[in-house]
Image 1 (cartoon, one colour):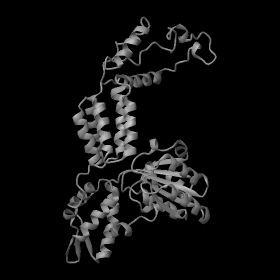
Image 2 (cartoon, one colour):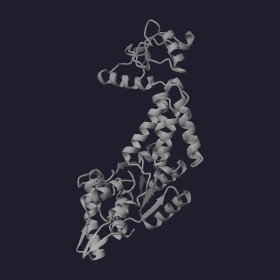
Image 3 (spheres, one colour):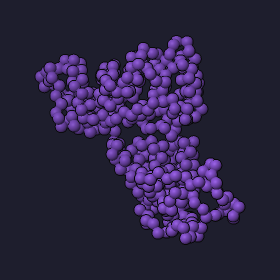
Image 4 (cartoon, helix red, strand yellow):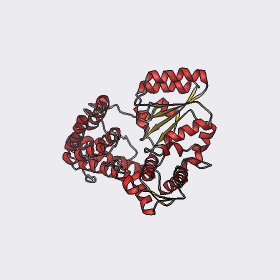
Length: 410
């Protein structure tokens, strides 16, 4: 689309939206302008300006700019960049979809940064924290770009208005408030999509005298169907997890694959499944979290479409498991307790404390003080394997703690 190149922001102040990052006194703006970083990671939805922002930083710092995409770039490309950066001066390397790089490729990025020959800007549509090796995380500052709002789109249209007048030699360009709202809704926070739809509206527009009337209705018909906005993604994620929690594998499958169809990254779906394995299944089937993690690793190794079989396996397994939220509840209870209490470690448990009794000298268990309170945080349920844990704790702590008297599962 011609408009995308013609109206591509050239300096920081050209960028619509992202005021939290680009305000004159913002940390990001100051860091970007003075080059005070080794590695920056930009996260945010498509069309919010990640690539453009990286290019502007490179231009501002007057650094050679190299753009790579993690889906196609490999070790050879990184090594080539390292070699060329050493000869032509400090280079700004932009890496799109950073979270797709494996650990060995990330190690090469470390060498690129630590050589002093390059700065790195990574971009991702999701927070890649769990996919990055610790040394790379420790060298990186993470900043989040937000979906464009109505004021940002209005600013973009003001630029497009002048562009269309000049391009089509029009005295005026007409876009009703209703059609602007329609374009904003169809763009779903994506600036690139907004400009593309505007271009289609102009191409299909009609002149009345010297006035160009944009044809939004026809342009909107070419918007990709089946795409959900952010709120609907969250709604479907919620529906999938609640179906798993409700032991309904059919509904859980429905929402899991609706998410895939709507364009959500499989990694994001699996992260919610991993959480559910502990939050909703817990000790009722302790191996659930290991199973879910293995499913995630296998999915990443196989890829789609065959990996969809593995996703279905994990979803139906978790939905079919017995459920317990007692570990999850215990986490909240102990955090609430610590908000108002600062427990001291009992003398026998201290590093050089006196009076500690070694349980294995007494058959594996001995009653002694382990905590600064007798309060029960974890009260196991009678679901699945957790019933065995409940029975064991009641037997071992009889007369000291009462298990089985706590809150029912929620």
